[in-house]
Length: 296
Image 1 (cartoon, rainbow, N blue to C red):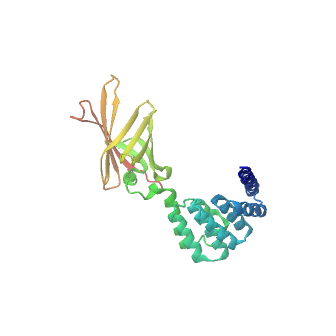
Image 2: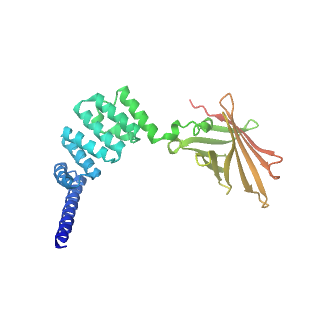
Image 3: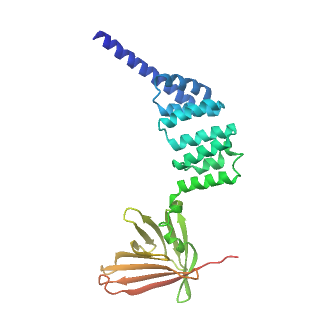
């Protein structure tokens, strides 16, 4: 019993000592004292080899110190421990870049991208890529990284409504009634509308595809207090149609059907229709013709 007690005390003592080393190493790492960080992480890992974050920080410290063979070996340890695999591979590729091993650099970079690496700004700014930044191969890696960062840009369903994007004059019966600026938002995952008129009326909407119900949605808010939450009811190439309910001034529930159609000449038709009988009959309201502005 007494022997077990001392054994437990020893384990606790070793654990506390290890945590003290880890704390010191973390402080060194945060203050960018790479040499001390290397020493303390190395000591800590002798008794805590399962700590993949410590292997990563040890490797990163060695990368900063220029001891690239050690850095590569210890990035492998972090990777095997599943410490943020994409980011660990990215840092490992920097070690290959500094060693001038281009083939291994690209092999590791591409593997990082396959694992989901998405911080393209690091590729565009970090000094390790200075000699590679103008090459077509490197630019392709940046493009793939951007696609990881903004997956909506390459999702065909989310690109369905792109025909509405532009800076438009809005006409009714040939007369200009307003202007509408339609832009991509949030990395292409949404489309933003900003509508203005010569008078006091204006409105904005956010349009997005929701993978939960596999439908497009539009939420419209206007300066007069109108709020409409539209849900897609039909979609074909060059066309999308929405439906929403709202209360008219008398308190009656009205259905609003909103249709966008891409015309062959590049213009867009936006048609609002209303129904007060549950969709049996429809009355056309606003019928807008969108024509893109052309600036000199």
